[in-house]
Structures are given as C-alpha cells and as structure tokens.
Length: 104
Image (cartoon, rainbow, N blue to C red; front, top):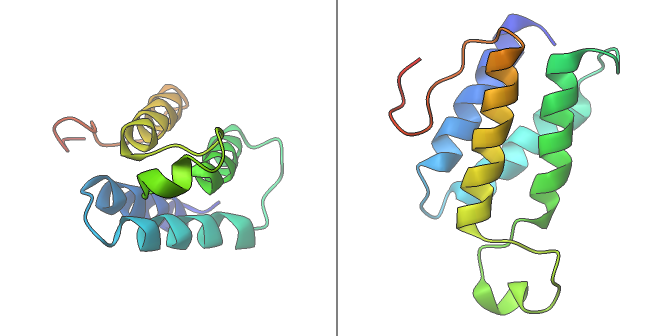
C-alpha cells in the first residue's frame, strides 16, 4: 500500500473514532479501501489493516442488533480494535496518531 493510501486509511479511521452518525460510513469507506487494494499478503502493515477491516465487519452500532449475534460489538470495542491496530502499525514504523490525544 503506498504512503498516500496508508495515510488516507488512517485518517478515515481517525474520523470514525470521532463517532457520530458517520462512524458506520467511515468504517465502510475504510473497508472498501483495504479490500480494493492489491498488495503482497506478506506486507505487515497491510496485514494489520486487512485484519482490522475484517474485524470491523462485526461492528454494530445498534444495541438491539448486537443482541442478535454474540459476535457483534459496539463502540467501545470498535475503539479498542482501532487502538490495537494503531499500536501494531506504530510498532511497524508507521506514523499513527495517538487515539487518546490525536497527536502523532
């Protein structure tokens, strides 16, 4: 994944972390970007993004919908999943904002 797309995908996740009604839309935008990317599967940075994109399939904003399936999760876990992915990206040398402060 080139630097421009990587930065764009990270920025989309930061916007999703801000919450609001656009969260689901930003998640979908991030997932589309990842799934459409053609990158060597052994790329560790792309692997982190791909894993996160998959995990976010189970994000469900509605508590009622989450009760339908125990694999669904809400906002708290969404934020934890993104924070964990950002930690992994940081360990791989990617400049990622601190999810608590927004600083890089």
